[in-house]
Length: 179
View 1 (tube, one colour):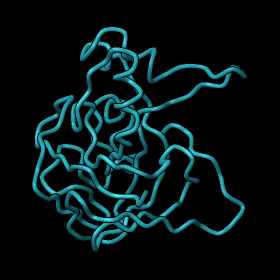
View 2 (tube, one colour):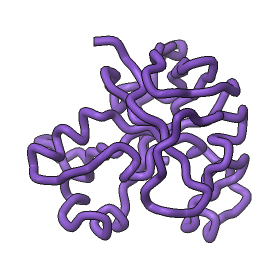
View 3 (cartoon, helix red, strand yellow):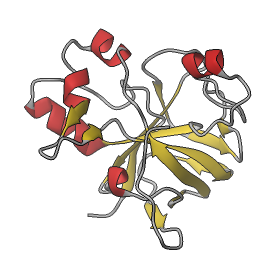
View 4 (cartoon, helix red, strand yellow):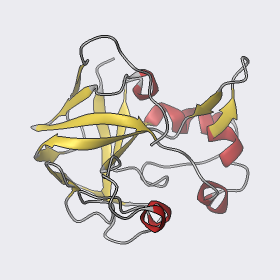
């Protein structure tokens, strides 16, 4: 199956979920135009409180639609945009990408910086959901399943049905960690 964009979302306010859009504009070094998390420095409230001058490695949030299918099998109905992602994907294993992978989507390029670290707001959205998306595997390693974060390396428009092409960084590849 080809890797594609399922849907795109944006919210000008710091809301947990984001509203669907026909297209989103990505601005190089800034993020999603009109989104509360756009900017060169962090916009996530808890991160701003710690250090408002740290670089924004979370300009764009991507989640794979396949996660929603897994959650549905566990009794959690989650729709695209409800977990706050800007781009919902299909057919790409986002969580296995290395740091620095470049996602070519439409005429934009996003550089993957790390994993989204799910927080208590997910349980506020749906009780019990946090333990489904933040868990330990059989080896005792923490798994963060709520997608990846990235920065915009080239401006452009992203729309549903756009193909996604992955460009891996030079080796050695480094696994994603929370950002």
